Amino acid sequence: MAGLLTLASMVIVAEDEPPPQRAKEARSAAVILREADRVRPPSFSSGNDPESLRRFDEAHRKAAEKIGNLALEMVAGHPRHPRTPELLRRRWGYLNNFLGRPRDVIREVELLLANDPPCAVRRAATVATARSAVATPDLGYSERMRLWKRAVDEVSVPPAQSEGGRASKSYQEDLEGAWYNYLEGVLQWSNDNTVHAKVASLALEEAGDTQWLAPEAKATLRLTRRIREPL
Image 1 (cartoon, helix red, strand yellow):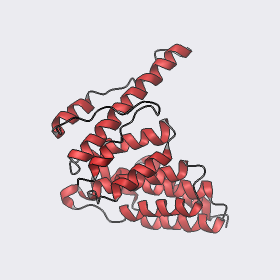
Image 2 (tube, rainbow, N blue to C red):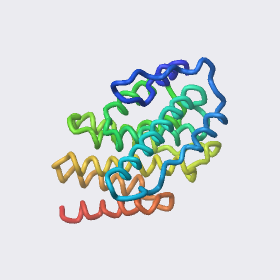
Image 3 (tube, rainbow, N blue to C red):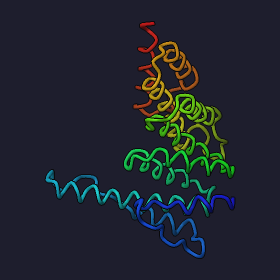
């Protein structure tokens, strides 16, 4: 997966700063993960005053940047490690939700997918761009739909038992994320009630095995019934 080395150069830095120098030798997964596990941003701000909130945001920004760059180091050197998708989700979530750079996620993921990553990485990547498709204001609707459908297609086949099967935490997160973004995206960006009803039906049919879903995802699927009832 030499092509992923190109991806590893896309470290998270401020847009006006040069990227740091890459290490000459790849580090072991254990070393990278130990460093990642030591990154623990504060759970709460020390106060509600502007300075306390600024310090809280800054601590979260630094932690997210660190995790994001470690994620790229993992996918470049250890793409099949079971924790690589976890770190990538955190990286892309940071870019999508904290920095407001969903187009960067789409660009990065397309580069990664072009190099045929392992299935678990591919699932996490397509779900990340499904979120980006919801969050990018000026993206064409057909492109949004392509990204949403790609994600649900990826999660339609559960992983092999060697990966933990359908019950694996990684797969559950991707299953929920794919359908949640598809539903939310269509409701937000389509004015066609027929499309709303169709997506609701698909969600209930294809992701309706709710024993594997978190409470938030179950609630999302229950809401789809309300989409169809008035039609």
